[in-house]
Image 1 (tube, protein in one colour):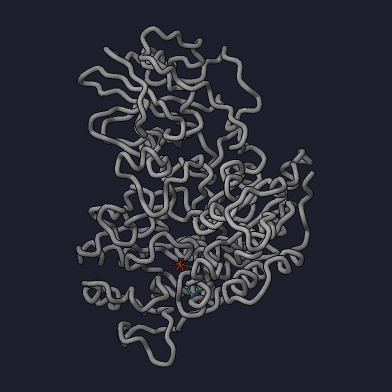
Image 2 (cartoon, helix red, strand yellow):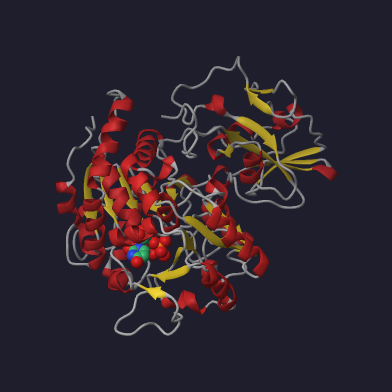
Length: 569
Ligand code: UDP
């Protein structure tokens, strides 16, 4: 049984010393300690003493190992990326507070000794059983484990969780398919279950949404912030001088400068970075809590288009700023932008921070065309007239993150296979389908879980939240479910990957075939060809094609906690 912890001191010892990145993470854990502890008490009360298994967990932060080059640690104080460290610090705090037994490693040597690989011996199966129920790592760590565990890697990979900022879509994860169909990248093709990848934002429901936390405010702090806001103060998003090199920035900066005093937090050594115009008040890179103080005063946090999808806009919104960002038209993706090239996803990024755009929106978030001076100026004027309250979605509070990780740990199991038997090799007409568990909805537009069907009480998420919708051509299931106020749930694909489901939806199939394709189950409507999925690892919420209408498994979700359905905790 796992018992909630009431003190973070032991965790700070576990994290170790000797790297700037570790100091940053520890500072963050210390700074947010009270907030974490309060959240843990609240979740404990909510769960009312429910049985929770204590897991033995290894946290191996691969990108901080010397063996992977550790390019991040030396840049912590120089404006380098901090988002990953923010997230790892929060993951550690959450796992620890939930009462699990933790080991933390940031070198290959420590990894080997914890896994039980004798020093000097690589690539051999482990001699003893793996002493961890779960291993949280990243792509670098995954590679190191594969290299040093020999055949045991295959045996134990179901216990791994990969912290993967931008996400890995199923088409890129399946080695054979990725190779055959041009989805092979430097990172993907691990043949893991796609939910073993855990992202920074809820990018695609194919992966699990891990997230991070932002500082929360009490009532008094909120009042204080509101009364101390400087209505004409803007802070520019970005710590590195390079973001100021953006083409065309002179035009929109001149407009902004007409209305607001512009502040920056750009790293510099001795001299003001030449890229930053003289009218900008640059504070240099600030320690995290001072950066929060600056956000508390500012009215506007403005993005120049880079970095993509970091924590700072959420912190700004949580501190009562409006976040203004550029719309990307066409959207940025691995097909057209250097930054995303080689990343195992085809996701189209429609602005600097799509989560802020789609999940938060106005009045907190304004997404506009920066090339259109009128639109830009009108937005600035409107923002200056708008009063906003600090806002933080529940999923980015400490309680929200604890609740989510708790649910994953208790329910996600990739080691025991619960999937239905593999599809038949022969073409399907002769095949007998199992009895249906889906029924047409009262308004005959989609299928719902049949009220008479018995359900497996251990299935997670519970299947009664399932609704099957047919996508438009050119729509992914992610988009289809979203349009119905739902979220795509890949674990439910197995319930609708059946010939009879087409029939129930009144879809005419002249032929039905099982094939490997990340868009299946789907129908090519004009030719009445129906397709079912042959490879469960390829079930994918992401992906669309003008030829197919896809069968999409959607479910409800909790307000502010999209990873969990209403009955999921
Ligand atoms: N940050 C900071 N000092 C600053 C500016 C930002 O400590 O002067 C922190 C901020 O609080 C956030 C983290 O940097 O938590 C990462 O923010 P960002 O969104 O810039 O993502 P990154 O590109 O660093 O991953």
